[in-house]
Image 1 (cartoon, rainbow, N blue to C red):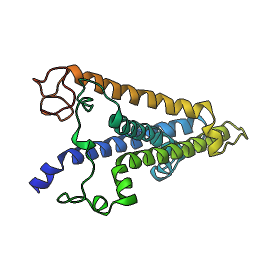
Image 2: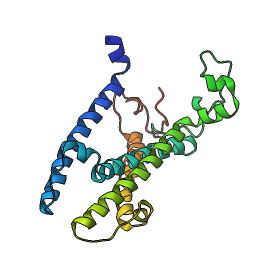
Image 3: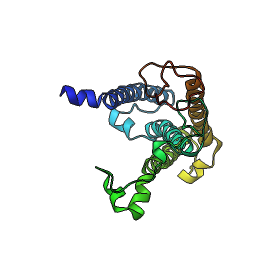
Length: 221
């Protein structure tokens, strides 16, 4: 058990923090939603009703989409763009291990590498494909939840206006919700890339060694 905890500590802690944050979001979000319901003379909603409501779906997916977009963009851009001195970049003057062609004869090589062909192409791009697929899914669900919440708000105000998911995606409200999150994600990536040139965090693989010169690119020794 201790070995399992040690070998999986990073993912376990992050998943735990995600769960705590999500529970907090649900509790506070339901309370806020019910306050708005009261303000409009509408009945309170149960926990189950809130979890299946457009309000919860929209609020959750709005944030998830920006995170998956951030990670997908970062994974793809770092494959061919460089920032000299950054721990988050490959060295433009050297061949990085991740640039080598896959060797099907390598010991314990994953099955797609041994099989080659389409399966190898998909596998060699699987990280970015998965991240962008999650982004697209979150993006669409954000639109679905946003359209539902918009329609509920219109009905609460006695309006007969009703928009489809596609119609909501063409509104300024939808793009305001998306872009306000996207810009913060791109800013955080840029800050990490640039800060890692000059700043250090001992023992973190996201940092260069403490005694490394600012000009060193990548986080190798």
